[in-house]
Length: 145
Image (tube, one colour):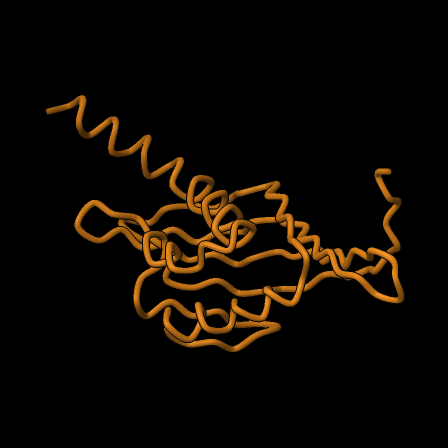
């Protein structure tokens, strides 16, 4: 019994990092339908964007198809659990590649997400994220040829 409690606590401690990494992977791989595995149906994104509901969020992510590719780099993930609710911050640089004037460009966005995760029936998922854009910069990329 004690082993299950310990593994459950360790699992909850790692959940914010795991969920943030899965979010980045699903977004970058355009697996938007998989977002339901890491977000509750009533998920909301606030801050730079105001999106309520998982279905609306998935629909909004379709705009990323306008980019050749994206790459989300997850960095610091810090916060605290109080019972079944986690509140914390995740630092991210989101790179968005696109072509313009015959050259490949990259839009980098420095983001601090304010995350809220809830555990329900032993499953941890995002209930909300506050999108706090810190900065953005567009550069021309060097070609690899």
